[in-house]
Every structure is written in structure tokens, then in C-alpha cells.
Length: 141
Length: 270
Image (cartoon, rainbow over all chains, first blue to last red; front, side, top):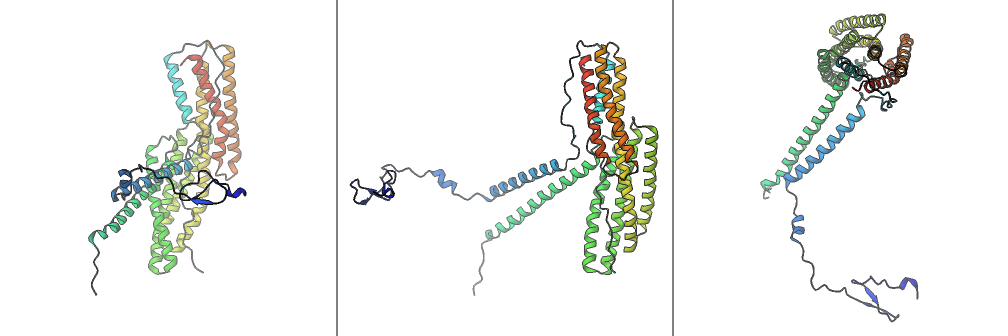
């Protein structure tokens, strides 16, 4: 028998079935379920068109989401104040034992930290304003 | 023929669409405004300068300039298309206004840089004075340019003022970049000096600990000196990007100073 004629045992519904005697095919019908599943009322309600305010709300929410994402991307791309230093300083070697210092010294240490934060080299902290340098009115010859 | 009437609610979808479109447009315009505001803010707020008044002033002037620029572009386009006397007059008027505001923006920016330079310690005094003198000179030139702009009443004067501004703005950009670079160097130098000062007060440090901190401070100083030397070498070059190059050169100094700060925190338990 040709391999193409081997019946598929799952091939039942609305098709023909090999009758087992190797000579012919006979039509079969799908087994009928005595308790067909009832269509759920929810399915019916899901077919209802969305109300206009709801549609409008969904569209607006979508637009807002896209807009916020766009603003975020633009802000990320145009950020000029990103510090170029990404690596944190390596931990210092152990310098035990500790020294007792005055509160004044600690305050100065805090000030040093603030000054260092302000002095962090960033990409042009005071950029030249973006202006059109070519404002002119062409004169025709 | 019988007139056909549509039910009243047949118009509603169209009205709602129009309303939705307007609302979406409003949302998009708000977004654009927000982005524009952020960009203006990025131009003016990116430094912890000591002149909030100048900062606010500059921000307002940039916004005003941007509005005037739009008016100028539209008027110029109209003039190019229509070639009428009235469109020419409008183009000249809007050009004069946008040029006035542009000069004002540059002037305020230079004043802000100058003010920041004046209060920044850690800069060699002679270099600082030299830079301030150059900024003052530029401010005078901008004043002269503003006087020329105020007298613009035809397109030839617009173009003459444009030529003058081209040279002026190039010099302003170079000097602005150099001055901001000096501010960056000065701030790190002042921090390093304070670090040296704190080290001398830690009398109880072990020699080895002291040497470690001294070595790190020395390395920071070397990086700052290199940046300073580079800036002086660029003195005669019209390098508008010098500030970005200085920033890269100062990175190692900043890292070393952070290390020094960590040392201090560790040895003093604070």
C-alpha cells in the first residue's frame, strides 16, 4: 500500500475513514456529543461594541502612554548633564586604627564632600545657548 | 425627490471624533511644550551657579527668543513666496526682533559665565583676570551689535548685522568654552586644596597612611595640572570644544579626590 494512503487515526470528523479491509474508504460522521457545551452568556456580552467613552478613554490612555515614553526617550537622549564617570572609586586599603577627630573636622569633611560633588566634571556644565547663527534675508541679484 | 434626513445621533460620531482629535492635539502640544521646557532648563540649570537671577533671566530670554525665531521664519518664508513690500517689511521687522533677542541671550550667558568665574576659587588670579577682561570686551561688542540691530530698517542692514554677529558669536563661543573649562578646573583645585588642608590637621595619622593620602592627592594634582597646561596650550586656538576635552582630563582627578575623601572617612570613622 502506498504510504500516502495510510489513514490518520485522528482523522475523523466530517471525513472518510479507512474501513480496515484495505479496499475502500467509507464516510464517517463525527461523534455527536450528547451534552453540547452551552454558549456562555459572557461570550455574548463580549461581542457587544465598546461604548464610545470607553473607546475614547482607551485611545487617550494609549496616546498618553506613548507620549510619556517618547518624552522619556527624548530626555534620555538629550541629557547633557550625565557625569562621564561611571566607575566608583575603589575601596581604600585598610587604614585601621581610626583617629578621633573634632566635630568641626567632620563638618569640614562634609563640606569637602559637597564641594567635590559640585566639582564633578560633567559634559559642558554651562552650554552655549542654542541660537540660529544665520539669521539673514537673502537679497536677489 | 424626498429629502433624506439623517438621524440626529448620526452626527455624534463626527463631533466626538473632532473633539477627540482636539484633545489629542492638546495632549501632544503639551508634550512638546514639556520637552521644550526641559531643553531650556538643560541649557540653564546644568550648573550649580551662584546666580539664580541670571539663570532665571536667561531661561525667560531663551523662551522669548524661540518664539521670535518662529515668527521670523514664517515672515521670511512669506517674503520668499510673495515678494511683496508688506511681506518684506514684516520680514525685516521680525529679523530685527529676533536678532535683538539673540544678542540678549548671548549677553546674559556671558554675564552668567563671568559671574561664575569671578566667584570660583582655585583659578590662577592672572588667568582669571585675563578671561574676565575678554568676556568684558565681548560684552561691549555685543552692546555695539545691539545698537546696530536696533537701527535695522531694510534687508541690507539685516545682512550686515548678520555678518557682524557671525564673527562675534564665534569669539563668544570660544571664550565661553574656555571660561567654563577654567571654572571646572578651579572647582576641583579648590577641593584638592581643602583636602591638603585637612590632611595637615590629622596629626595622629601613621606615616604609611599619610603617605597613601599624599600620593593620591599628588596624582589628583597632576591630572589637574595636565588639564591646566592643555587649556593654556589651546589659548590661541579657536577651540569651542575645549571644555569637553578638559572634562575628560579632569575625570582622573575627580576619582582620586573621591578616594581621598574615602580615606578620610575611614580613618576618622565619620
